[in-house]
Length: 47
Image 1 (cartoon, rainbow, N blue to C red):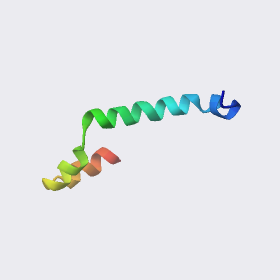
Image 2: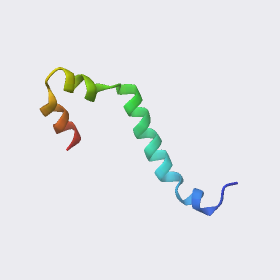
Image 3: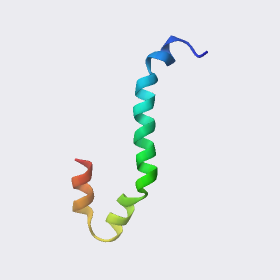
């Protein structure tokens, strides 16, 4: 329907969708960690 480029990127789209879904389920934890003075914990989660 969309072409070969979209078929080749299908797996990447699935991975990105799962990551976005996990972010939605967990919620805005980065904002809460920063507001409560736990920036170091947030930094550890990123790296």
